[in-house]
Image (cartoon, rainbow, N blue to C red; front, side, top):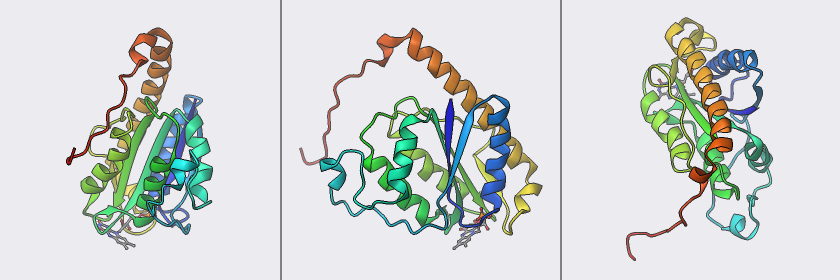
Length: 207
Ligand SMILES: Cc1cc2nc3c(=O)[nH]c(=O)nc-3n(C[C@H](O)[C@H](O)[C@H](O)COP(=O)(O)O)c2cc1C
């Protein structure tokens, strides 16, 4: 069982990293493998809508960390995305990364469990949380939720250590992710008929 973690902070040991470390402790206590990918300081450009990924399934035209992560996402049972809040949104690097990752993948991510976190000094966490969750909920991914909106507070590096509720919530979400991933594994064996999917229909508003 494996969880992939996307850390959107450019800070090596910033508040986002501290929150993710809290989750890692829970995952390792249940023997869940974790791989963290730190994207915050990388040069990741946005999607250019070129459709290269349609003629080269599973591959983005920009040969960078997105393609490398995509292979790992395919094998993972869960995905955690944690981003610092910049101007009341996930930071731009995270959005560029997720747009290209989710748009270029050629495999089914249904029933991989998602969890999102937004880390901020004070404002914009719930708006950012909404943005991140939408990558999961358009993709058939169940979302592991916590006991509050999944956020963490702090400005300077390390300040999140004082946000005891935020760190507790991160541990709660990690444990619920483990429960969901294990339950889904059992469910895939026991309820195969429920995995059959209706053929996809794609409409838009001019036809
Ligand atoms: C460009 C920029 C914009 C920011 N915008 C916000 C904001 O809108 N709301 C907020 O509460 N904090 C904002 N912050 C503060 C960060 O979210 C905060 O310092 C967070 O702890 C950084 O996480 P990190 O240590 O993991 O990098 C901003 C920081 C930067 C650099």
